[in-house]
Length: 277
Length: 273
Image (cartoon, rainbow over all chains, first blue to last red; front, side, top):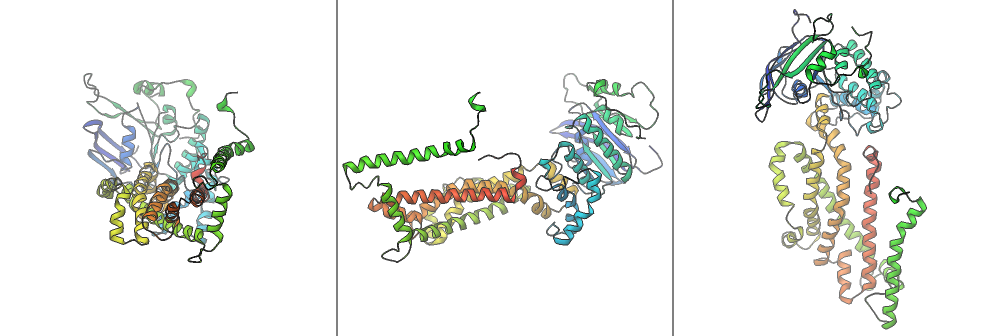
């Protein structure tokens, strides 16, 4: 991470409470443009809450999140794309219709819909994109007729149509087979290298986090009250640059897995990508 | 093989489906036969032929007094009232239901009101409707709307709330305005469920229609069966009931067909009845 640049996103003293119970506390973060931050942590440690706050789906109880030095809008906007684990694409639209939807919203204020020649133009404009995500043959199918991997490829492509500066991924590959995941990693890394957006990705898979990210954020509780386990919230306990040479005792996947209480098994390891920087 | 794992072939399924119908008709014919053995002038269980003749008279022979074909006139009037009432209820369900389901302020303002309103037994409103709108078409259509719209509104609002939040947020990140979200996301997601709700609402709609026609009308299927009731004309009433049932069945199937044609995506995951 270069210090001279203005951070793309900075988080200052963010806390999040649900009904008086702290989930996150004292979160501080500066992220350089073009970073790929992977976020791991035990279940219920607030990593998805953190991602939802970056999306403005939820607002911090205290503290500020700044995007390019300005406070985040308080509702989701096109500058931040999102891919959820499921329900990310529109079930009533075909693959191609899902992909032209953002352009329809932009061009047709009143109807939100293209007709006739503009519709044909929009469909021909997405040929290349369909090719890239391998859904050319499935262009007229509905999401329910696609496999899980195809649906997530569509979801990622759809989220990138508006060219968001920040892409948020909430366990996007959590429901996919390991083999399919490797393909998805390649697609995602390729798109990230081409488009240069900043990515935040929540994952349960510690290998995925190490393989994809340029920076690993670990969420965990640092303060514990044995009499009141709900007393304290989680925060970022480890912030590891992954592109830099690995040093120190806690910077292997096994160690992080132990720290956050995620079972680690060598068989589950996903082969690392030699092309990845 | 266990009985739960055995499925009938198409032909067997058709035959099995027909069995209860045939059994009912046979049981009726037998009972009617024995009653008429005792009293040939029995009016309670008329023979199938006499019902057929009565139905033919209503459908194809001009009425002596007015020169009209009563069955078709009654059918047209009743279907017009039913269709207008259901159409109004559906439009209300879309407008108010989407408002309640999609906009929290509208929900706070209208949800408790609609919930209360839907608890009024609609038939108790009928005298009020007759007084306010007179005995004409408006009060009958209004009864159907009052009887079906509140439930349809609540169902539609729930259908909007059931749209995964993820989809709505995704639409926001794709730059959609609220209006665009309504036209491109909420309405398409809700319409197939609204059609399912219409199919269910047709049952009470028929009840309110027939009731209103029975009380104050000069034409219509409900008017006719309550008129001929005075003469114990079971040979007209029974075919009329069968005819109303057939109409209701056809409307239900038409709506299902419409849903399957227009919202194919909704029926991909296997379908129920």
